[in-house]
Length: 64
Figure 1 (spheres, rainbow, N blue to C red):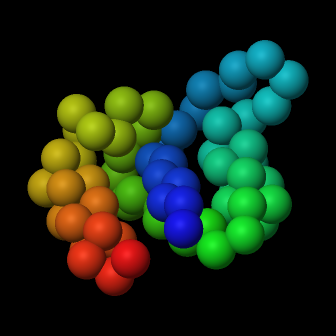
Figure 2 (figure 1 turned 90 degrees about the vertical axis):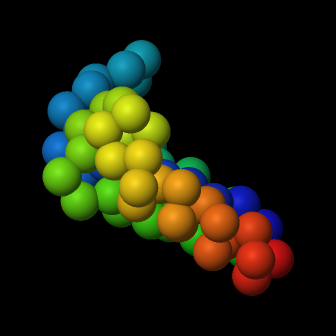
């Protein structure tokens, strides 16, 4: 299982793609991946929404 996270306010264009779109593609292409969009966070979701991130990661780990 794989957890893919990104902030809904992310506007980073890196390399050849837009990060939110890249995250959605990544989650579709990895078997058993779960995609979680973190509302109100931009590119630095771990610093911007640690409460949501920590809870999301803990729930994912408990489930798998």
